[in-house]
Image (cartoon, rainbow, N blue to C red; front, side, top):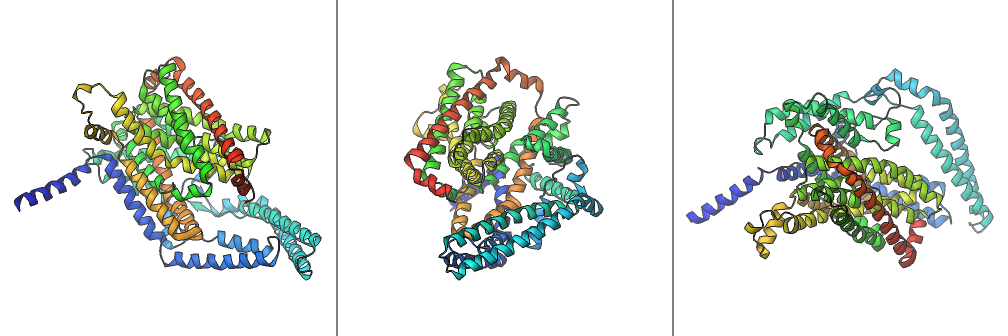
Length: 585
């Protein structure tokens, strides 16, 4: 009996001891946020919205049976369905608190505050254009309805009348789109996000301070330094939302690094700020939140070709790039080689973070890798779609190529958008499938590092199966378990809710309303913290001989070549019917 009690006590102590480590706190904090998110968005109101979606679906089905083309009524039902989103006083408040600074062009104050008078002045030049566009759109709609009614008098058997009605519906869609864009410019709502930023600062500061003492860190130091770190992160978002800078792909990650580096390499980072610059804590929690958006179900949207282009090509490119850096360039730091190879081949910043944790890379090495990645991503985001368009490449192949080679998910979507909706959706799905293997990649890196690279204590290592597995487990970044768990749980939720329910509740609700905005803030805080902890003198040593740039350039050429070959093989030779299906959407 006494032994049993002792064992129970030992188990309890073991569980409590886990929370001396950052990874488990990251899993706990992210899990609590995701549980709160599920309860907030999966209530009775969401069930009512799914019911409304079914009504709109029935309208669309009836209209599809009525006419051989998509009618005005069909499109309006689709627009109404797409506008459905879970809303409550709580979810609206949470979304407001997590809101990032607004876009701005010449006046940075508008990123945080716009008065009612200022909103009217800003929208005034477009009012007349909007009113005119509204009239044109209404007229186009009436003409399309009349043409459809005329075609119906012939039971939609007259191909000429059907074509005329279809053309007028397309004209209405175009005019309606112009009306919507002008409405957004003409009718501007005033805003003041400063109070919400203060609430967000307090929430993140207090929430992440909870585990500080247990991890042996200064809770008071963190709370005292965090406001300054948060202000720098807000400044990074401010610069990232400037329209010209944003168009060049210089987002908050870049500016977070820059602002942090400016502080650390001029006045020097004060001790209190360093105590609040919890780089890995923010990053790991953010990555677990990211796992909830990496849905296994989405693999099914693009099938075997998408899986092959990512799950086969990605590890091949990673290995080839690492071998080039190790055997040809003979890079002094194997961990820098691995982080850069993962960054360039898998999915940019997120993969670099996971790889850095798995091989215990230095912060300076992660900073260098991310900096190079951001520069090349900004260039590729603009150059790749232009090159693809110049070659007159079909959007499916072009989208797959972009999705497999451009590092950042946001840049992938932006580059795909340039080629049209088909390329955008294919590119985004390919990138999403690629993100799924971040956890597997981290496990592979941890295993390789444990058994092949870090052999300084080889005489003391146990190379039995049990010993090898223990070594892998010790090096494995535990937060990846949270990433994989979140992915599996939310994939199950996504599948259980069905197509419409998942879009309304998960995509538009949980992801857009809470998960992605909070993840963005945590990443911004993390890269600001990296900058604050990085010294140029130390960073410059890593550029010695230009090897990092050479590694990235050669790795990117390998990536572009192998990905294009695999995408062409899958989408044009082996599965042309999937390409045809995607093109028809």
